[in-house]
Length: 324
Image 1 (cartoon, rainbow, N blue to C red):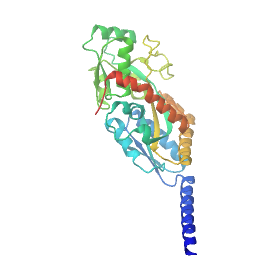
Image 2: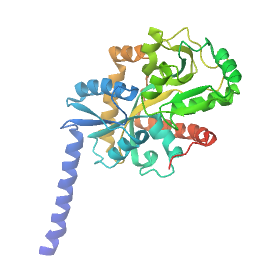
Image 3: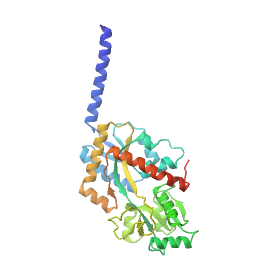
C-alpha cells in the first residue's frame, strides 16, 4: 500500500508545482520589472527605453525600472540579461548592432543573441541621416562625393565604433558613391563632438541623436538613409533621391529577454509595448525625434531579427571589420 501512495504523492507534488508556476505566470507581473539598456544614458536606445518603460508601468501595474549597462558594443548588457531567470522580470533594451551585427563582427562572443535571447517586441525604427558640419563647403550629397574625390586623403567619417550601423553606413556610401573616405571610430558621443568641431567631415547618425543640431544649424543634413523621406525633415532627400541608391541603413530598437520566457508572459510584455506605442502622445514624441513606432508580435519580431542578421552579415564581411 505504501508503494502505491509514493508515486501518487509525487504526482500530486508535481501537479502542485505546475499549478503554482501557472499562477505565477498568469498573474504576471507581481513585482517590478528591470529594463537593462545596453548603452549609455541619453542615447537613442536610452531615450526610447525610458519612454516605453513609463507607459508599460501604467499598463502592467508594476514599475519598469531602467538601468544602463553599456560597454563592449552592447555585449555587456546582452550577456547580463541572457544569464537571468527567463521569467520576464528582466528585459534588455538594445538596437540592431548588438543583436544583428555583432554575431558577424565579433569572433569570440560569449553570448549569441540570436540563439540565447527571446525577442519580446520592437520599439522603433529610426533612419540614419548623413550630416556634415556647416564649415564643410558642401550642401548636397553630390557636393560631398565631389569633395571626397578631390580630397581622397583627407575626407574622414566618424562612427560610434567599429562595426556599428554608423560605420557600415559609411562603408556602403563608399561602395555606392565610388569614393574612398577614411573611417574614424570613436567611443560614444565623441564621434558627434568631433564632427561638430569639424575634425571629421561627415557622419551617418541616428536622427534622434542629431535632430537638435540640425534644427539649430550646427549640423547640415544632406540626406536620410531610408526608403522614404521622413516627416521630421521633409525637405531632406533620401540617399537614392540624392544620387546614391542602395544606402538604406536605418537603425531599429527593441526589447529582449532571456531564452525560455513562458509564452503567456511574453504575450503580456509584448501587449504592453504595443499598447504604449499605440498611444498618440507616444507616437508624437517619437515622431518629433524622427522615430517611427514598430509594432510586431514576438514571432514576427523574431523573423525580422533573423532577416536583419542576414542583411548585415555580407556588409560586415566586405568592410573587413573584425573584433576579437
